[in-house]
Image (cartoon, rainbow, N blue to C red; front, side, top):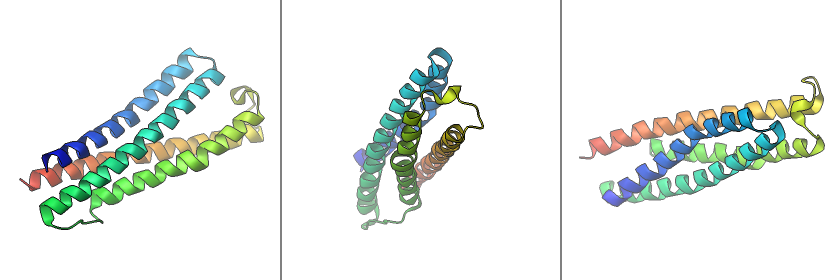
Length: 159
């Protein structure tokens, strides 16, 4: 049971830590590199963050199910923390498989999006997708912090 709790907390801490650190990487990239290079660096970092998210989310869910089975003798599939982790994974999937490919397509159709006027259709569409991407990652962070709170309560109540 201790191993399950440890793996739940470790996976959540790694995911939240990466979510918190990602904007620092993005800010630093755009402050020090040409915009096209910075965009590629941020894109690659975001893809790796999503890979981490899929791994950490899966580990959390599996160990949470094991923990619930050991503590309560049943899976409790719809525990609040598990539902929120599932929502985080769905949002990560939307970003990974819907938003990023559209942004990549726009990036390929324009030489340098940041050099385009704000009113240009490609730039406006890219900026809109970027805003959605930012909102999604922010929502994932808030949900993750909520899961951290719920998980800490869950562990303190089981003692």
